[in-house]
Image (cartoon, rainbow, N blue to C red; front, top):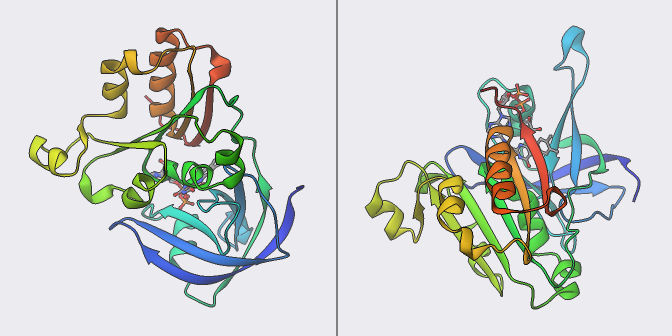
Length: 244
Ligand SMILES: Cc1cc2nc3c(=O)[nH]c(=O)nc-3n(C[C@H](O)[C@H](O)[C@H](O)COP(=O)(O)OP(=O)(O)OC[C@H]3O[C@@H](n4cnc5c(N)ncnc54)[C@H](O)[C@@H]3O)c2cc1C
């Protein structure tokens, strides 16, 4: 559906990790969206000369359930996340949406691998719990490769592990071996995991969806093209740019 102006009412706030929280909210008018799309939040008066700012947030919940949910990383001093963090149950905010073309495009005979760091997991949670996606290809293999520094930053692990036919792999870059093992996680970065598991991903059989920082996305893309993946098999949503 084309984007519309939305008025949202917060119905729940939940801490997911020490730095990430989830907001559940109802919107008026009611909207339909595709898994992977985002809303553009209006941050009132936070811009230059008191102008409003806009910040994008992927819808983290399935298109089939309400309320809608966002999964937000607190950025110190960041106007968007500070505004969202101050909202309480009953608070209102304004947004535009839905937007975006970061949606499932893979033919049913190929698997989908979702690579994310941090809150980049949000669009994949929406996809994995989307009936349209799972009904279109019930036998499709799906893997999520989720990167964080350590076990305190893991997101949605139980939910991710509950999706039939889907494998969730957490890659912890700074946890020690014992902590990684006790969390059933791989010790290293998502890029290390891919480099050491090339055989698991024949280019004929998989598409990749990447979400998070530009640095992770560029590095993963370089690895995948090195494996022989065509650029058309790699889909991406950059949340923020990291300069080298
Ligand atoms: C299409 C799209 C969807 C997005 N969806 C989400 C989402 O679902 N959840 C979410 O938390 N963010 C998401 N973002 C990022 C979000 O739009 C904001 O950039 C972020 O919340 C910071 O906004 P701010 O105003 O608080 O801080 P700013 O002052 O705008 O940002 C300051 C710095 O924070 C860092 N940063 C920004 N986002 C993140 C992040 N997610 N994790 C770690 N560091 C970050 C960057 O270095 C950035 O330069 C998305 C971005 C895009 C483009």
